[in-house]
Amino acid sequence: MCGRYTNTAGVQELNDRFRVPIDTDVGTRRFNVAPTEDVLAIVSPKGRSEARVLRWGLVPPWAEDLKGGGRMINARMETVTSSPAYRSLIPKASRRALQLADGYFEWLKPERRGEPRQPFFFQVDGGVPFAFAALWTPAKVQGEWVQSVSLLTCDASPNRVAAGIHDRMPVILADREAQQAWLDPALGAEEALELCGALPVERLSARPANPAVNKAGEPELEGPALLVAQA
Image: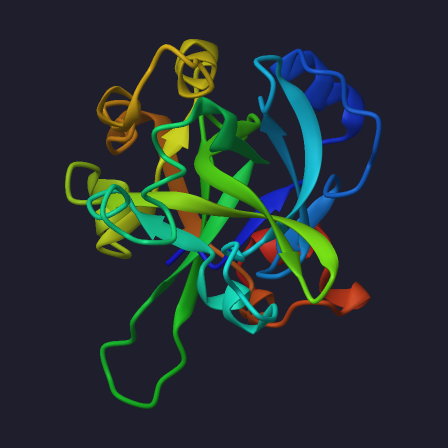
């Protein structure tokens, strides 16, 4: 789930929102972020928050190539402490990340077999930037260093807006206090996971989106028209 999202804000708006200097526009002004693409995140590898560009889709240190990264864009919070790829990351604040976004897409399964799925666009608090709780790691693959990230997901049932479309939803850290806590070295794995419940229903909205969002990487499909259903 959550295989596409948006980060349509510019650098200045993100600087103002997250109060971390961002010196690149990579990952900003994006209306259809897809797996394996470069994304903007905030990490704290040395106890101080900084913005970095990461590859979306975790590439673990033992990977021999990048092929598996496209399948590791999401990590289930229920199994993150036992999964070989994530269990050494979650206890360390230096390996927790805030993956920046201002919306995400999810697809509703059709009632009849063979019919196309309808994408829905989700926003938080009317469309303000927020952060996905995420995990990241560096890995040396075929002689080159790759820094990659995977966002966490949780059970959507406590949030009827999300659950009406899909049984899973991304872990959204919408408030500064939760974002700071996620990167706090004083928090171990269990305390960090206590931050990872479903967002309250009153803070999440959803509306049908343009089916063109199914395609990524085409310039003509990158824009506000993706965020609303076709007439």
